Amino acid sequence: MSTSPAPELCQGAGRPAGDDPVHRSTYEVRPLATDAERAEAVVLIENRLDWLAHRGLPVPGRGDAPASCRDDQAESVGLFEDSVLLSCLKLDRHPDLGHWGSDGVGHSLLLSHVHTLPGRSDNIVRLITLWASDYAARLDLPYVRAEALARHALDVDPIARFLDRLTHMGWEVRGTGAGAHGERAARLELRSELRPGLTPLIRCAVPLTPQGHPGNDRSAP
Image 1 (cartoon, one colour):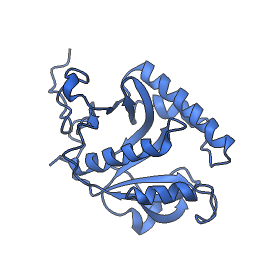
Image 2 (cartoon, helix red, strand yellow):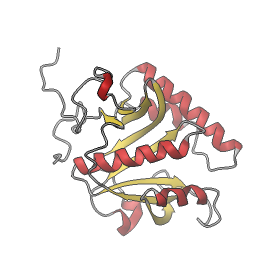
Image 3 (cartoon, rainbow, N blue to C red):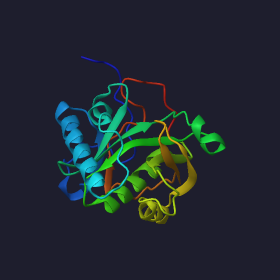
Image 4 (tube, one colour):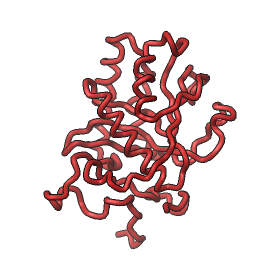
């Protein structure tokens, strides 16, 4: 049995989920820690890719779906509503964004392999946006960054409407270029922002210092 100290959690994550029904949050972001949760994430990703393909939207490579959930070296988290997985994504606290050029300079939290439950995308992305901006601020990181596949000029690309909705959520489109995997992508940036009142809506159970990698993170405020 490990005798190492428990990892620090972000504000509002000090109690186990569901132990206080009166103050229970509607949603929770937590690590995908079990084989069952990772398997559920693979199913969600496959369903999402099918949904995108049927609508003629850019679809990332299907071969990456299982690997993205089962990579032990990656930090995978999920957004849950009760026991239902709404979204899965990877966090990179020290991303190498050299391919962004000057737009990638500075510390940031990178969200990648973001997949959401089909049919509820906008609301789920809004929740992820709120959580990620707060979480990055608690890590003392100024930005959250992400990439979205975009194979054409953004004003005519099938994801143009999606990008427009993102800008209304606070994201900025920092141009386009080669993404992390070589495909053309829109580069997205969101300023971090502490949100002290977020816990009643979204409970955060993601450690500020990732488990198994003590000391590799920046200190939270």
